[in-house]
Amino acid sequence: WFFDAELQMAVEKRLSIETDLHLAITNNHLELYYQIQMNGENIPIGAEGLLRWNHPDRGLVLPDEFISIAEESSLINDLGLWVLDSACRQLKIWQLNEKTRNLEIAINISAVQFKEPNFVETVQLYITTHHINPTNLKLELTESVALENLELVVIKMAKLKEIGVGLSLDDFGTGYSSLTYLKKLPFDQIKIDRQFVSHVATDISDAVMVKTIIGLANNLKMSVIAEGVETDQQIAYLKQYGCNLYQGYFFSKPIPIKEFEALIGLDF
Ligand code: C2E
Ligand code: MG
Ligand code: MG
Image (cartoon, rainbow, N blue to C red; front, side, top):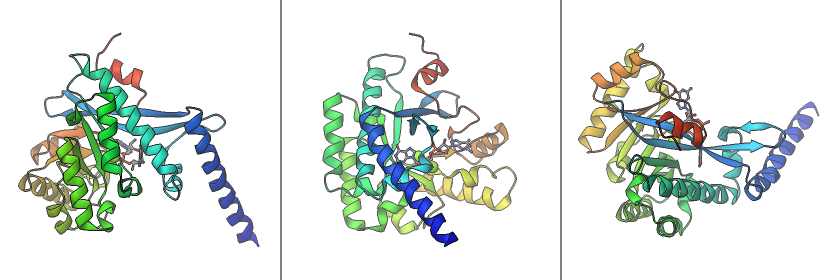
């Protein structure tokens, strides 16, 4: 019954997260943080939007604590819509300023959300309603989207590309990473997972992985971005291997919008 008590606590924690998340959406406790993405010339190209939850009692809660719970119910769709809306709103603001009009925002799309029958129409609706340039919006998907019906996934992705949004393959190298999927799915970009990037300068096999992924991306005419870049040594290796886009603590952690705008030198 020791186990029972532990199990019960886990179930209760999960339930309270679910209840609280509903409140978070209605009470506006969600916030999109921005992590800068840089090119090889040290010029900001945009940011990845990462969801944060400002919990009234628990403080800042990171996505690892609530995304998977949200994915077990329709909550993930509500969160996903909130993020999409928030990113489009920001893009609209940036679009009106010539200093920021080319910046892109990448947002993470859960496989559960992608699977919704009307996902493509929803994305189109938000782009139209906010009057944003679709090419500045990038959707980050993981390979888990392809676990379902591959043909349907290909059709959906093709429709999204028709709309004009970018498609980036997140966490590449950690999942099944089937080359068949990669060839069939119309991604514009591959994100090299942090686990390889963090050892690119020190571990031969991780360096080989990174080189291979970059070669693959080049051959498939996809761009490639390294995530989790923390040192200039890692950048030197990535650059040498042909990767020219970077994101990681070396440049900045994910930060609130005001701090991000200060970081890129915007003053209001
Ligand atoms: P991800 O999309 O792979 O995001 C990258 C994660 O790595 C972020 O964690 C980021 O803070 C962290 N990171 C970035 N650079 C570095 C670095 O140099 N060093 C280290 N140690 N970490 C770095 P975060 O924000 O906690 O997000 C975790 C995951 O939660 C994300 O992984 C993504 O899968 C998911 N997530 C975040 N926001 C959303 C969202 O709006 N919707 C969905 N569906 N998932 C989200
Ligand atoms: Mg991501
Ligand atoms: Mg990632």
